[in-house]
Length: 158
Image (cartoon, rainbow, N blue to C red; front, side):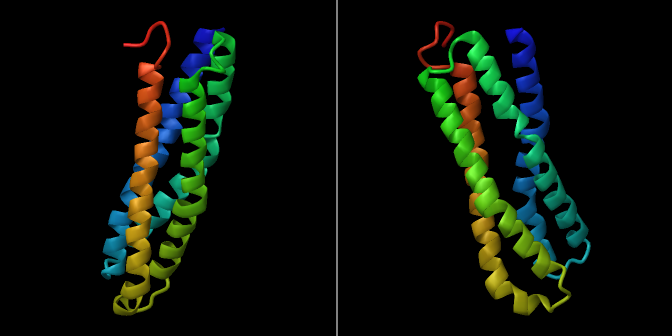
């Protein structure tokens, strides 16, 4: 049973968290293009925001299967699992508290039809903060993946 849970955990992480990570990373690039007046970038922003929202919800399956896997393996109380869980909560907080609202604000500004020059001052700063939050989100997931592979203190750690 542990093998099945682990397999589902890994597949769900790759498919859903991977999609969110890519969409979050690409959003600032297309936001800059849209704010510079490229009307073709606005549909890309809408798509990236939708992918981020939908896959963020679907990504909730990752910790569910992760906890089930850790429990079945008897490692739920191990430091690397607890640290991974804390980092997952941090990533979720960055996504829900900074990235998604930031994307929504930028998308509203880019789709408003206002002149790009007027949007650049306030919205460009928002895009910069969004890019930093996106990078933070990505780095937190890198740390989680490293913990999942290395598993400090486990008998199979490298």
